[in-house]
Amino acid sequence: MKSKKRIIVAITGASGSVYAQRIVEKLTVLTDEIGEIAIIFSETGKKVWDYELGMDLPKSKLIREFASDSFFAPTASGSAGYDAMIIIPCTTGTMGRIANGTSNDLVARSADVMLKERNPLILVLRESPYSLIHIDNMRTITLAGGIIFPASPSFYSKPTDIIQLVDTVVDRVIGMIGFENKGYKWGEEGTTQRH
Image (cartoon, rainbow, N blue to C red; front, side):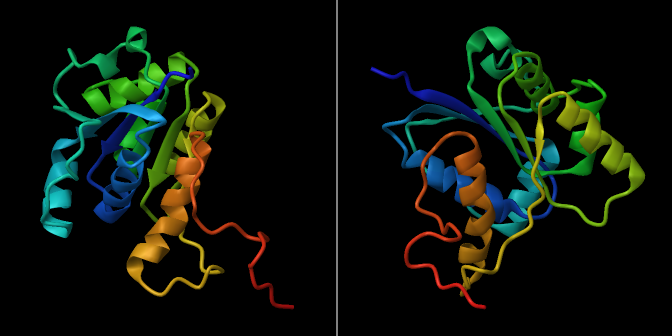
């Protein structure tokens, strides 16, 4: 029997908490494939979540929440065996700390662990435009094995509301860490293609 995956979801202080909300909601229903979802809010991430959403995390037995100032959390060590990490939304400041190995909080330390253990690390950036500093940090993380995934929604599925638009990003991220999802896929049967 295949062991269930353990996933880390970090939520930082960029605008776009709805991306984090949707990915957590979608991951919590994958109970046959996921054994744990470790949630880490940065200090500002929690404030932005409260301001933008005004709600608690979804209730799920899969969720374990860890404080961003705790280095005793299991996500801070490669021996804990987490399978993937998603930082959603990800600030460029967080990206810069990861790119430079500055593990000053649990988010950056956990990302450092993912890179050193050669496990998937996806940074869903919610920032524009980019400076050369941002681009250099993206390059560094990409060369180290991380994935830079700007929160750029797609429109060819003809989304009719904000949640459908957000899901065009979230569904692709879920697919990138190895889970099948029912999101829109270009060119599949039933897709209308215009010429």
